[in-house]
Length: 231
Image (cartoon, rainbow, N blue to C red; front, top):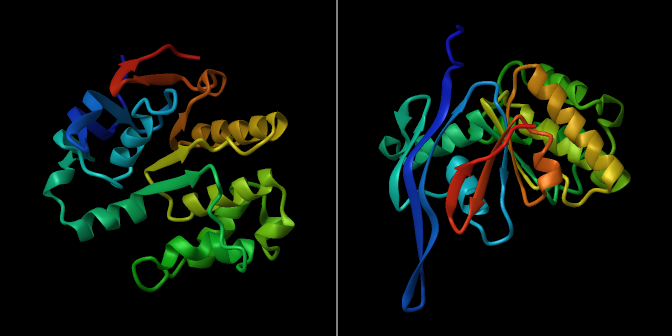
């Protein structure tokens, strides 16, 4: 029996509470699970279920009210804000529904942005950009601007930008939400290929059809996380 893949993220009884006037809302309640290297996982839930709160905690964009989050076995609460920002920039690639590309920059310049978040770009910056563009089949569009691209092409560029730092996890929030059915299928195929190449991928979605493409599913409802079925 083979040993389990290395642990990347672990949540232990994580909760998140928000004050709302005179009341307190439990957006996340006692969430516990482990994400391992090479997983292909969907987080599924309707609007208001708590899945966005969970995504923010997974991406270090927010901190839990209770419980602990571990990254590579290290408790995230023990990291300074600067250290968290470094992990977020170097180890987690984000893909958003709205693409979030800068319209005045070329495709290549958009993809290059994360390489300079913490000072000077690395010595192999150009090679990293080339690799990221090749992975999403956008090398031929490197000198175009976002306004000259289709929705699917813009999402491919956004994925390349997320990959350029060669992160441990690719975290995508409703990445097919602004795409037609055919283009969404192509983006899902791209995620499958990236996972086949070893990338750890987590996609947040409200669509059970999209979630059905993933080997592992977590279901979020009323702030509670349960393990779902496999595709």
